[in-house]
Figure 1 (cartoon, rainbow, N blue to C red):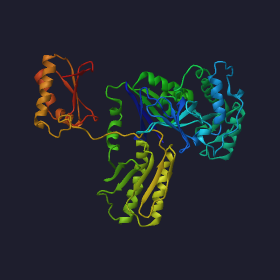
Figure 2: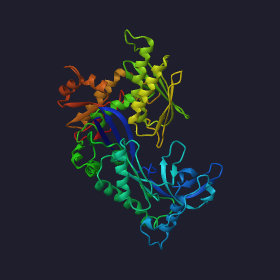
Figure 3: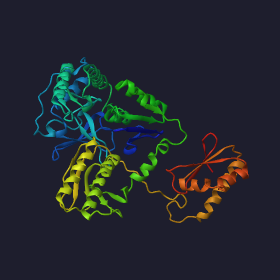
Figure 4: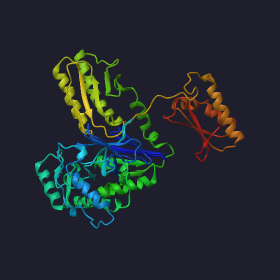
Length: 516
C-alpha cells in the first residue's frame, strides 16, 4: 500500500498527516515542549498510597499526581528499586546492570503498601498520557523501544511478535537475539525484524542498552521529580512504528526536521533516504497537498462517505457512539436487506479510518442499519475485523447483536484528536448579526485602494475563501481586472480552504501580512 507522510512544522507544534492511497488516515500533533509522552521515564516521588485501590499516586512534576497500580509495578520491581538505590548513590562504581544482583520477583497477590512508602523515590515510565482531568498513568516495568527490538531491563526473557507467521523465522530470531543480548536484559522482537540480519539487530540492541545505561550517570545528579529519559519526538517515533519500504514520500516544510528525518531513514534503509523531501512552496503545505480540505471533511459530527450515506459521531464521557445512516442512497434493483448490507460494509471502511484519524479510545458503540439475516451480520463483523487489522493500537471487536449494534474497545494512551470544523463568522464574531453582505466587496475595495495608493505597495497578495476568490477573479470584467485598470497594479488573489467564508488577509511583496 502506497503511503505518504506530510509534516507541517510551525513554531508552536508539528502536525503529522499520514496518507494511504492519497486518503488521510492518521493525524497527530506534537506540541513544542510537550511533556509526559508515552515512553518517557521519570524519577518520581510517592505522594499518596491508596490501599483500597492497591495503588499509589506518584509526583512526576505534572499538575495532577500520576497513577501507579500494583499490577503495573512489574515482577522485577524489587530489583529495579535496588538498582535505583545503587545508581543514586554518589559512591556508586557500578556501570552496568549485569553487576546488580537480582532480587526475587514480587508477589502477584501482594499489596502496594508492602513495597512503597510516602516520600520514597521511584523510577517509572509513562504508559498513558494525561487525558481530560486525569494525570498520567505509570508503569514500573520499564521498556525502551527501537524499530526492531524492545529492550526490557532486569528480565532474561526473549519474546517474538505473534504477527511473524512462520515458526522457522520465529525460532531463528529467538536464537539470534538470545546469542547477542547482554545478561539481565529481556527483549521483545517486533514484527518489522522479520528477515533482518544479526549485524543490524546487534547494532540496534547496543544502542538501546547504551541509552538505558546513561541512567547510571543521570540518577546521581537529578532530584525527584525529574525527567530521566525522554522518548524521541513524535515525528521520529511515528516513523519508527509505521515506516515500511513501500513509503512513497515524506515531505516536510522545515529544513532542520527534514535533515533529521533523512538521517533517521538513512540509518534504517540507506537507499530510501531520498524519499524525504523539503517543501519550498509558498502555499501552506497542508493546503498544497489537499490535507486541509480532508481535515474539514473528516472531523465534525457528520461524516459523509459513499453515495449520500453518512455517519453521525457523538462523544460522551462514558463512550463514543457512531450511527450509520444511508441517507437518500438506494441502488435500483436491490432489496432493503441487500442495500443495508452494502451501506454497512462501506461504513466499516470509513469507521476504521475515523478511529485511527481521531485516535478514538475506550468503548465505541456502532449502530449499523438493521439487517435481519444473521449471515449478513457476520459478513459485516468479518469485514470490520479485516479493515481494522491495519490499526496498530490494541483493540477488540465483538460481533453484531440482533439489533445490529457492534461494540469495539480500543486502547487509549493519549488524548483524542479533536478538531472543531464549525467556523465562527468573522464578521459577527458569533453574535449572529452581520453588516449587509453586499458591502463586503466595498470593504475590500476600500482597503485595496488604501494599500496600493496611500501605502504605495508595489505588489499585493489577497488570501480569501475559495468562494470569494472565485467571485473576485472569474470573468473578463472581474473585480481583480478592474483593480488592475484602476491602480495599474496586479492584485494576486489566492484561495485558502482553511479560511472561514468572509475571512481575508493582505500580504506585501515580502509575504508579510499587512495589518489594517
